[in-house]
Length: 355
Image (cartoon, rainbow, N blue to C red):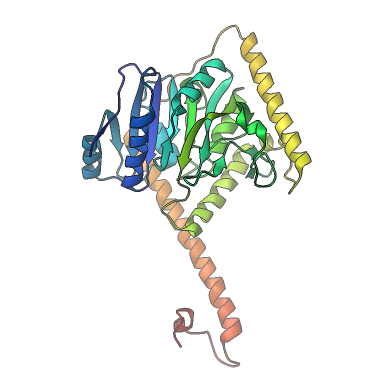
């Protein structure tokens, strides 16, 4: 079954979909766009297929009319896929949309309206729900130790999340980024590979150019959480990228609030700081005599694929070393507890559960 998306020759919005999940989720994402995108906002849709063979790319182009399909034989990661699409995108606004997301009516209109009316905004985030209706995120607080939390305690979100408001960090599952701001910070940082901390890094980068991140709760999506890889591997990548994030932003993190578990006072201080920064950005925009622009970064697809391939290889090597170390520790622990007195190292069969 085919679906059709309108494709403008002069788009205001470029919808960028990095595709790494199952094809049925991507089809559901595209179908939600076909159902819910408005007629009065010109847009284009760019799908980046990671680790793709030619056949799936050709099949997708046939089944979804009006989209531009870009495929890479290597995993470009989230940041790499975004940058690949940016090299082609023509819109004033770029929207990152995960392939396991589905938009709701009014999604695009709210994002564009908020970006239009808030020139101080470098990015605008949607309100993201799970498919059971529960709230996943409406933007988070970045703490000094590079952790992120909801801007409230407990399970019931407060009323203030129902208005357009500044946030420390969005997610990337549904995020409008002003193209000029994207270019000004040099695009997405591909060192955060393949995922994790791309969003936090973008938020911190936008702060450096006096741009705020807003969340508009009128723009809503539903999003599947999780990934294809194991929880253990995801945790390893999260740790590696968190260390990179701290190394990159250590001095800037010092200006943020320290993490205090179950502290409403700390949350309140963080929210006041975020509002104060947004107010500073609004005043700077109001007093600016001209708008600065940045050239679109030069882009070489072949060089990017080689760089991402090397990054993937390096992470797999680090992960193998990590697993080997964990296995050595497990073997030593089993040997200490299970070897009879006077007997040497335990046998591999013990580890495999064989007697």
